[in-house]
Length: 503
View 1: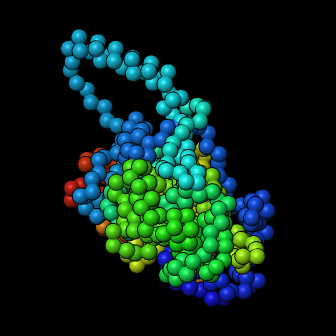
View 2: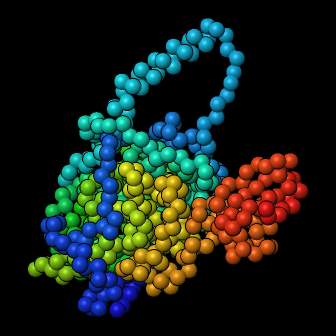
């Protein structure tokens, strides 16, 4: 089997490979023919249908869209790279008011409650991102009929927000647009192949999926991942979208841009106009594929808003949630076997769409949507380190308040996970895996961290082999002492001296 370098940071099967020897042949049993023009394999973890409909909030920061659901400290683009926002519960403050003012406040509160009750179904409706079809001039939003009131995912105050390797991150409740977690959300940096979600939106806004696109020489000369298209071949936009979004083929992205707009520059202009219409104020495009280029950047917040819009388009959701797909041969082109490059979709429970990327400038970038217990979340991180596993799992586990251990190492025993050999078949991803950031240790296996004098004592006296995983937050005890629960014992530290012992 041969591989080529790609901007997803791993390898991509070249078109010349012998697919009969493909290591993922076992997954082909999942395929069916329910989608015209190709064979589709179902996601391993089917998406839970959305239960409600709410209005679109993509033109304003997500953290402003549902202030009564999550209270998040304000972040601006000048924050330090190590800053990480902590989610705080609302605090009650008691003040003395005059009787008249108290009555006015009481009347105002009653008015707000009544108005909220009457208008609740208008407030909580699902955003439907629509496209105006071939020759369209822009994007529009519309709302379907109201349904039941949405209950957001409960905030887990018993676990700290996760420590991440990534420089920037964002976690959103896809259903209502509420912000759950941020880390440097407006920091601008390269976004690699997550660019292709915007490429797909713009293409579908200006052409029908059945549109025929003739491949030009300019398309096949694109660097990085390619699906192996050749000049003179003719594909439908539908099939090129599969090639662009699943294995992240740069030649497919370039072919779409030129085929739909007539030139890359015109298409990129549409991309930037669409970004402005969506309120992506920290995003600018220079190409349709995401390879590093000066002036090509985004931020974690904008990628979350982009993903929310893109994944509300059924075809994009369908493509990005598909694990394997075959574009059948026609008189105008060869057959292509495709695999989804979004590694987490092969092993994270409920994963059902998104887009990863990797370039030298961007490092690891990922967007992943996942559903569980009636909730749909979108996790984003940028400039990640080491792998596509740790940060995406930590974000979603915390968002779902579910720290049941999940790992690609476990899934590998059931079926192959893409890029497994490049990561040593994930043998390193065990329950005691630790994330070390800024002098703290975070254990994804339990969702708790160890820091300060507790970490010093923990490390010096045997660590996880003696104490086990941390199983609680630091709590105040008597006489100014503080305690933290571990699997095998409790560590007590006298403060402020920081002398510790086990109990």
